[in-house]
Image (cartoon, rainbow, N blue to C red; front, side, top):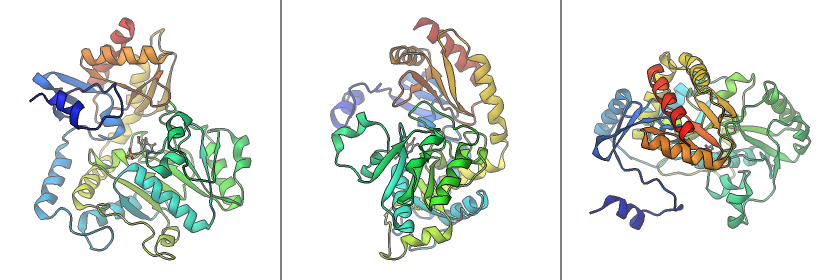
Amino acid sequence: MDLREDFFNYQAQTTAFASAFQVEKAIGSYIYGKGGKKYLDFVSGVSANTLGHSHPKILNAIEEQSRKYLHVMVYGEYVQEKPVALCKKLAEHTPDPLEVTYLVNSGAEAIEGALKLAKRYTGREEIISMINAYHGNTHGALSVSGNEFHKRAFRPLLPYIKFMRFNEVEDFTFITEKTACVITETIQGAAGFIVPEADYFVRLKKHCEAVGALLILDEIQPGFGRTGKLFAFEHFGMVPDILVMGKGMGGGLPIGAFMSSKKIMESLSHSPKLGHITTFGGNALIASAALATLQEVSESSLMMQISEKEKLFRKLLIHPKIREISGMGLMLGVNLGTAENTLNTAKICMDKGLIVFWQLYRNEYLRISPPLTLSEEEIWEGCKTLLEAIKES
Ligand code: PLP
């Protein structure tokens, strides 16, 4: 049996360029390939493995829960300790009016839920999103994503969606009394880790309030500590009406969630009731992993170390071929000028035992989004390898 061959023959592929790297196991900041070769992981499953691989607290949480029960009922019917504790802890760690959390299966599903919620609460149809936004790949999430290349073949998508420029206050004129919501990533990911201007979100929120539109922030990538705060909006002096999270909140298991005030969330419970239905949302096993992740991120010194780790990356990654380092905290984009440079560099890194990736829309940006647990020694080690690869590319 050739596993690699079976991978291409039987596991559906959507690209001819999969690296098909064969994984044996993963521990801490390292993934081990076939034959035991170890690879330092600067990507963490695309911002998903907040605490690295096989973190003992997550493994213990999963093991303990797996001995009690796995799936017992569809979302929201039965009282289960771990999902309730997770939602309560999220409420404790987020400012008012964020209060109640709807747990779902993925980031894209959380986006779907958030959009439905905004439409139901406001009774309006129009949605404003951002050029170059990425919000996932289901029909609704794709509709609010701002890259035509990835959307064109799937039209018709959702109607009544307009796109404005991220960070451009002039475009606030798009947002009117017709607008149900503005949806945006707090830090644009696929676009190359674009950080908002310091006062952008305060002004955006104010404008939304003035016309009665809700502000949805997609924190699926910064979520759970990646920028040094539990959520990136905490750097920008405002609170969204609906907060969307996913990826890193699960500590390596699939999850998504959207959070709002009780008053807003209640609009999914009438006319019609059951305004969002999901079988596995709030699954106890997954919630136990997310709870362990949230506890560790919020109770350890991890978030306090993020800024120093970012500084170290920025200090070490200096080379004539590096045009810019975008992003914030441990979501950094290394601009190598062309997609070719990035892809070559990533390939050479892999040969040398370092995993890096590139940004979906802006391939000239190399992605660095390691586990938050990455040590300073590992940053030194990985940056040395990356610089060697950049030189050779
Ligand atoms: N939103 C953002 C900002 C993302 O980065 C992603 C995934 O990359 C999603 C939404 C969709 O999440 P998922 O892939 O879990 O559906």
